[in-house]
Image (tube, rainbow, N blue to C red; front, side, top):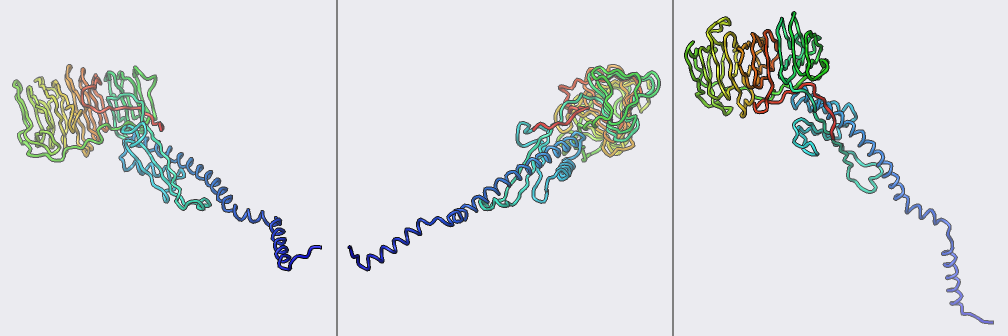
Length: 442
């Protein structure tokens, strides 16, 4: 029999107890779970939040899409940038965008993407910032969710007649037995009246590419050479010259407003530099022309009164000729255009500069004013007759062919046989399109 020392026996017992403790697996799962629980919970939270953020992003994308489309529609109608911003924000907010935790950027033209720099497009960028939920175990940084959409104004028919009034009956009218031919262009009326485009009287006719009315149309002898029918309830066409600032500084005004003699020739030159950057001349109280009058390039301001030929006698047998290249006539302070009677017009607008493409510019505050133009056969007007607040009567067998003629007014009335041509490639005018649509492109 072997006898062990007491100290050895004590050490053996201690080792035996440690070995039993080591072999005991009770509670191990609890320890592992205690260690892994934060990781598992965080992972589950991250997964749940990822789905939530994805849903939020899709909702935000929808809001961006409808906001961009709405802004495009308002741009097509010619609204200001401020109104476009308000429209986009209102539509986005009503579509789920949380403006309290985000912001909206509206870019015209877009600043990114394939439509960058395109003036016919609008870009909407929405951004929302949200605090993290369970995923805050991993990061305290907030979650930024962004969406972007671009709408473009596309298509449309080139127009040479545009009535801007939103409510007037017969905003674009062909009256009596008038025969109107629009060669290579269309007519558009922005009025919501049931007869916004009106052909009244007997025997009148209109031949044009297409006809558009924001309201309704009452037509008779109408020939459409491109479209199959009149487009009613059409989107309003944009005023192409709405962004052009009208002159405000008249400079020295000439009180001698009778120029030329019945059988003579006279040249008129601008005599001062207008702050807008072009040479100008101002006539106070109207301008009456006789004989052959040639205007040198520049801006001519008619400050009040009437712009007439032969004293305004529409039945005068004395012929008159008005000639000018690179000219703009600005009618302000109630000035009216009365180019009627035996007058031949050979005028072209500037092809560059602040008034590029504008031949006659009516003051935008001139409500209640009516301008009358009646050129004899062979007359040529190269440019826009622009009178956004006034009525333009185009009458008396005028035939401004072989040029680019645009008429943009509050109301346009044809009361005489007229032929207008729209060949504007080198005229300096702005494109005037009717019947455009808005679509999402990005």
